[in-house]
Length: 247
Image (cartoon, rainbow, N blue to C red; front, side, top):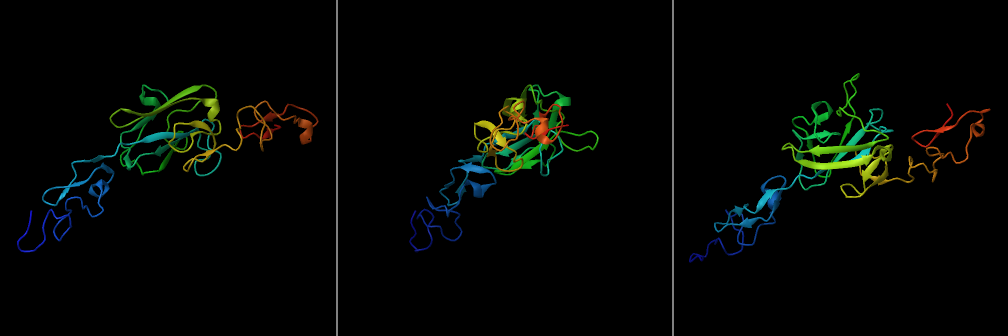
């Protein structure tokens, strides 16, 4: 379209007053400017208004990210039993209202935690859930994670579609079993970092091998005896933190 008056023209590729865009000129706007969490291809309509027909809500990618079967050792989640960390690996905040997590894939009521209204997880954010304590009324998870048997932890969305599932040997998670890095496919032994970026274990406490800065590991006491600790005798053991226990 042309103008005989020399005024602004929709279609000349220049965003003029009153125009949201013009041809390929979008003024730097993307689908994210149309709505929070929107992705895709933004375009310009013939009347120089934005065409968001190529935009859509980003897929929710919330993953199980870190697990411990013996509890968090320090920090705000310590002394609250078993813990599970979720991570938002997607491109948009996720409304968790109606999502559910269970250690039983059939989601029985007594072993399922349903996220309440207004629960959400920002992009790149972490959410830590700990075992429910009936005495104090704190915590969320109505199930525990075995420290010796196989466990299956399943996360599903509000439409009851599986979002993630982890099958693990509970013994592997005595300290921390996590994705490395956050959101990746690889699961391995980690140092506990609940609520923050995952970190590979400096040494693998819980694998039954005394290594690195560990004083002991499982039945491997590294040659230590009660006599080395100043006792006349007795049976020395090793804690889950790989510290000798002379009790």
